View 1: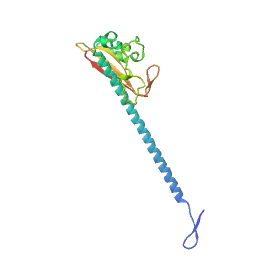
View 2: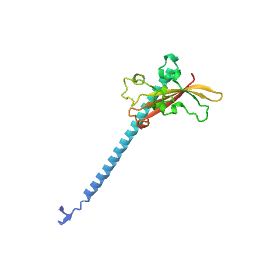
View 3: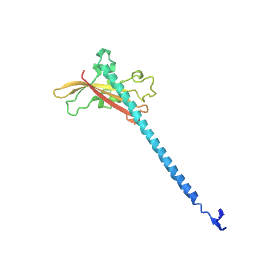
View 4: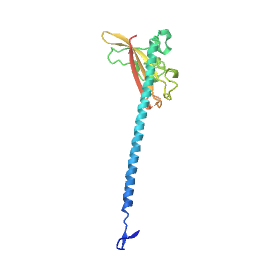
Length: 191
């Protein structure tokens, strides 16, 4: 306790109100700073997720373009996985028919597993990366192909489905994504 004297020479007691006010202001400033840091961290995570999704989309685009280009070559010049003999045919005019690309075994099974598994083509790193890129996908981009009979009158097209993966992509043994981004792209070719 500090005792001062007033103008009349009598002691005056200080109550310490200034200290309480300063402590309250410090608490408010600390909470505001913590909130701002949390917001910045959250914004950084969102930005990183958008970047990873964009990278996965670029890899899917690379796989789609690669497989489209290979399918437009003469059959003898194509990789074995995209030769006409292994591309499954699906009659989509049949009620309840689904594309071979929709079969999970097309993406996770062995070559003879069914669906479009025999056509699953994973790109080599020289087909999707550049020397200036610091990103490497968690899994190589891949594509599958199938021929589909559509419409009335009927006509046949080749459907190419590609998947691209972010650098932080991880999956379980069943092929279910556990981390990262996967982008699917599809095109229809009239060959």
